[in-house]
Image 1 (spheres, rainbow, N blue to C red):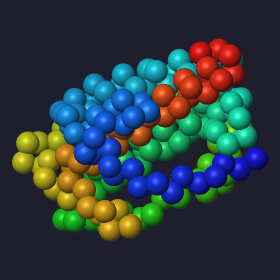
Image 2 (cartoon, rainbow, N blue to C red; image 1 turned 180 degrees about the horizontal axis):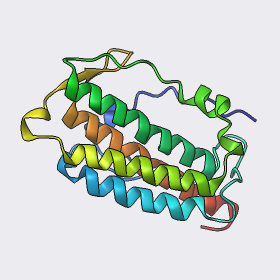
Image 3 (cartoon, helix red, strand yellow; image 1 turned 90 degrees about the vertical axis):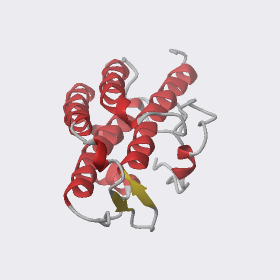
Image 4 (tube, one colour; image 1 turned 30 degrees about the horizontal axis):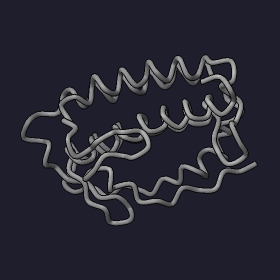
Length: 180
């Protein structure tokens, strides 16, 4: 069964703590992103190797596998977008329909072990690129297709929330399945 698309504007996570996962983008230092991304990827390996990784906790929530595919693709997409911000002045990001990607790429049918490996590889590449950002580059800008403006600083804090939040989502799902 398809998941109802998430159409929330999550940019508020730059201003206050997320009441669900606890991530606080207003106090997060983008300099911590490389270590945060790599640590998060290790959590995903554990979540994706769980025996119930392919099971949805309910008909409205992705499985750990589907969330893992999404996070892998977030890491890949943000690497592309970070490179655009570093190499172009004020790039416009193409819209990414994460829900269409989940269906078209058949997230639910992918292999959790392969996804875990791909996610870690994508995380390391993104972490390495963030580690190379120079102090004078944090204010470079980019624009989402809906017009939201980001600096590399805010882009980093916004991005780090996504995989952290989805670890929380999966852990809640496993608790629902009785294996928290």
